[in-house]
Image 1 (cartoon, rainbow, N blue to C red):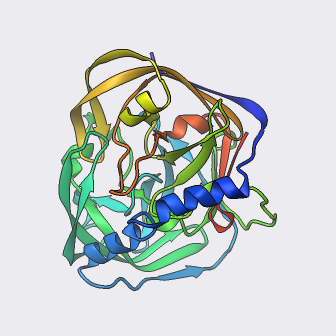
Image 2 (cartoon, rainbow, N blue to C red):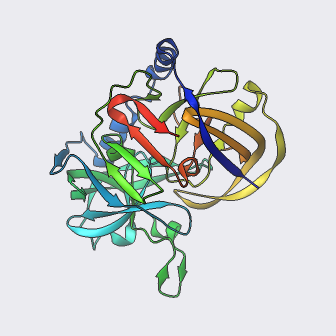
Length: 321
């Protein structure tokens, strides 16, 4: 059975030369610009939005649903909704059944979205006049329509998923924020510290520089909208990982349940900031999210279970201990 053990460890510093090498590796392709292009596809034209801060620092209650996803309250066109905090989603989205209630307008664009299992589907573009979370309001925000049938599981009149939409990297990459699974808070903050050893690359998906046992660098994505982590097939040979099982399983992604062919990796220990992360019996999954490079793996939200993770986009740093 899969497990993720996280324990404190002396800081794994990424040296400036190592950081620059990885920055150059990802900077030549779509990684820096894919998010902007996706927003333009959703809108069907160049996207002009506005971020208004009424408070630069604020906190919101953070809840975990029965599927292990973290949710916060968000106001869409001044109507309260519940959104999953999903760093793995490039573009924020709303369930199709909520479009009329929240007075969202369809755009002339669509966006093709791929899931962990590799399924691709065109999603209808939407625009919200106002999206507000805490002290931040976003005007004229591009979104996509999520097929409600992909997120429909009811017990009587109770929606077991318990959310209306997803808050994606399009908004989250603009913020310095903390996901606190101890105090159950989503916190937007101002970074007041100088960071000498950045360990995150700026781009269209969270990209962490982690150290392996041989002190070399691996690139890992971070998908807070997934409960579990996964590893790329190409990492098996590159890093001499042990495969203990091959088969298929049902996985849940942005397009609902789908069957995936996968391998199970026995164990891999990695080091991120002041955390030692040991993944055991971990599945393989899609890691080539951009044409130009592949991640070695993608961390799920299990890496900060009963802990705190702070993502300082302004300083290209993730803090975890």
